[in-house]
Image (tube, rainbow, N blue to C red; front, side, top):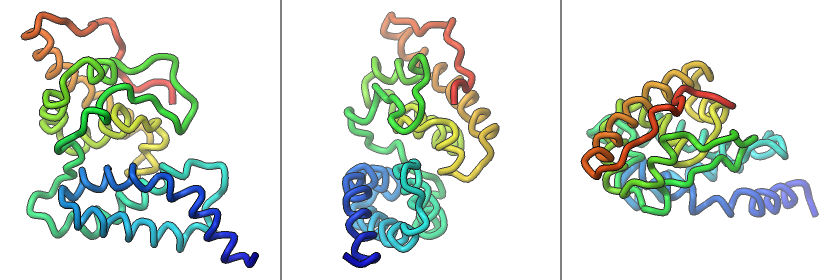
Length: 201
């Protein structure tokens, strides 16, 4: 088998199983099936072209998300009237809650926000996330819905890890406020003792 054939086989084995996850995220970004398909296709074309430089054993999912996020920001996002990343539009229930990182060393406990998301109806979580500032919303989405670590988020969005930690702290604080208001209306309280600052990369 030639080197190119070997590369194709490895790409198919490692990257193609993540196709559905990438398409789901692309749908949240573009909110249009045709654009989502185009975005995923362009992402995979770019990923394959660069796959020879990808280091086996590192985080392939985060690498693909970074390519797709950059592609969206540089291309598709400019075409949209609303200049924001619509990653929280029409979130399916299976995507909300129970978000534990499968791509890095796990933290000792689930974040308060992930636990709150787990207990809260999808429509309420969608509205709460949608109301956050874009930078905070993306950080919280990647951490508490997709389950990425802080380091992975920093690599995906292209900012220092300290910036990610700050965005998560502020975004989670606002999310706790919003979900807390819902919980109060339902007669259920969120724990006030949970530290919502970024921790345990």
